[in-house]
Length: 120
Image (tube, rainbow, N blue to C red; front, side, top):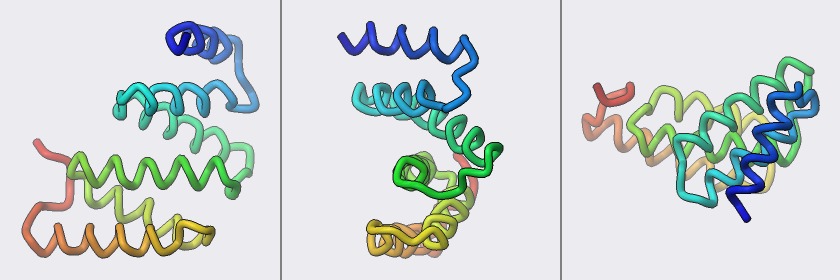
């Protein structure tokens, strides 16, 4: 059934999904399938669409940014992870303590010499 839902949201995306529901749902479905790279791509598109429409706050946006922060960290893109984490702190919200811990972990990785960008 998840595959059918993915197909349905892909059709909605192709039909000019102005509200960004398709991006959010596709990201969620891919995340649930363990396809984090696909999920990250759709979360990035959702965030960009929300920003373009002046929607810079909200639970879905915070969840997307948190996922992107952890994903960027796990792929070694520490610069992007830190930037997204700082943005999350600026938004506030219930995951503020988690974000602070994530940012401390990113700093520890930097000090350990893990680098700042994605692996080459």
